[in-house]
Amino acid sequence: MKLSICPTPIGNLRDITLRVLDTLNEADVIAAEDSRHTRKLLTHYDIKTRLIRYDDHHSQAGLETVMDLLRSGKHVALVSDAGMPVISDPGIPLIRQCLEEGIEVDVLPGATAFVNALVLSGLAADSFTFYGFLPRKQSELRRKLAEIKPRKEVFIIYEAPHRIVKTLTELKALLGNRQVVLARELTKMHEEVLRMDIASLMEELTLHPRKGEMVLLVSGAPEEEISTTIEQELISLLELGMSKNDAIKAVAQSRHVAKREVYQVAMKLK
Image (tube, rainbow, N blue to C red; front, top):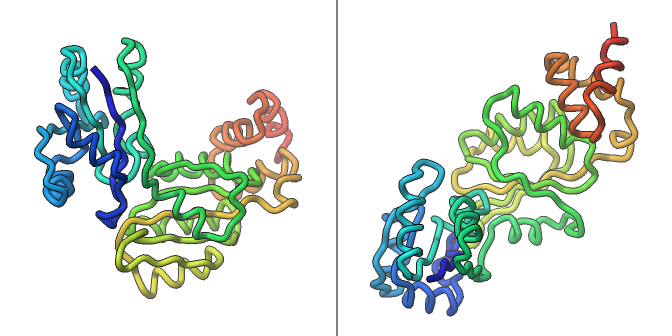
C-alpha cells in the first residue's frame, strides 16, 4: 500500500530517471492526468502496467477510485502530463488524503520546468517565488500583481501562448517595464530563451507569435518601488482603474498589514 509520485519528462522522453522507470514497471496501477498522453511514454519504454485516468481538478470520483485501490493494498504511481505532479498539476488532494489515512507516500526526483527555466535565465536564483498560472480574470489578476509588485525577489509563472501578450500587458501596466526571461519548449528540439524587458518581449511576440509551453521569469521590484508609501501604492493602483476596495485589499496583502490601516489612508485620498 503505497503512493509513488513520479515526475515525467517535460519534453525529451530520455529525461526520466531509472528509478521512475522501475517504479512505473513495479506499480500495480499508474494514475495519469491524461491517460492518452501518458500512454505514449509507457509505449516508448514498453511498460505494461495498468493505466487509469486521475485528474483531481475535475473529478472527486477519481480521487475515491485511487484511494480505494490504495486502501486495498495496491501500489499506485501518480504521474502528470509532464514534470512533477502537484506543481501546477493534479495531486495535492490525493497526497493529503493519503497522509491523513497513514498511507505511505514516496516522492521521486525528476524534471520540473520552472527549475530549468530559472537556471537558464541568468537571474538571481538565491531567492524566488513560483506562482504557477496567474488568475485569468482581469480584476483577480490585477489584485495578484498588486500583491507581487513590492516583492524584491524574482517571480516565476507558467503561461499559455495565446495569453502571453495579454499577461505581459498587465505586467507592464502594474509593475512597469521590468526585465523578464521567457523560456519556451524546454528540453525540446525548438527550445528558446528570450531575455529582454517587458515592452520588447511584447513587441517580439506580437510580430513573431510563439507556440509551446512557456515559463516567464520577472525580475523583482527595484528599490524605489519597495520603499513606496501606502498612499503612493494606492494611487498607482487606482490610476490603473482598480476599484478602491480591490486596491485596499491588494495593498494590505502585499504589505502584510491590516485592511483597516490601508482603508484609513484611502479615505484621505481625494
